[in-house]
Length: 188
Image (tube, rainbow, N blue to C red):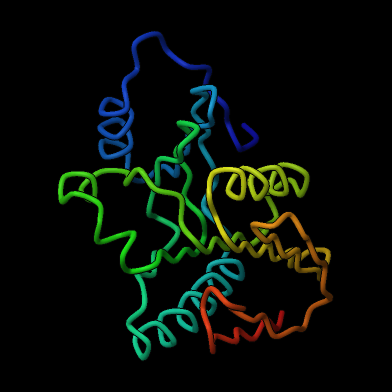
C-alpha cells in the first residue's frame, strides 16, 4: 500500500466522530480535507522528524522569551474554516487568538487556522499537494507559511497578501512582522 491513503467520506461522519476515530487510532496520522476525505499519512522518516523538531525548537525558544503565542507540534490537529482538519508539522498561534477559544474547543481539533504554518516535505510527500495545502492554509487565515522542500533544497514562503517567495536552502527565515525577532536557521 502506498501512502497517503485517501478514504472517501462516510455519510454522517460528524466532527466529533472524526475526532474520536483519530483518538482511537492515534498510531495513524490522519487529516481530513474540505470535502470530508480522510487522508492517512505515513510516519516521517528520521531525517524529516529531526528537521521538524529543530524548527519547532527554534520557534519554541523564541516564543518562550516573547510569550506572544502558542507553538504546536505535528500531532496537533486544527479545524480550518473550510471544514478541513489539518496538522502542520509546526504551527504557532497568536496568544490572544488561542486564548479566545473555549476550553472545550481546545480539547478537540481547535476551530482555528494557525497564524504560522510550517510543512517539511518528506520522501512520501508530493510537492504539488503540499503547495495546495499551503494555499489552503493561507485561504483559511494563515498569515505566514513556510514549505521546506528538503528534497529540492527550496523553501517556499506564503504570505497572507498573496506574495510568495522561493529561497534556496540553507537560509534564515524571518518571522517578519508576525513574529518579530524570530529567525529560523534552515540547514539540510
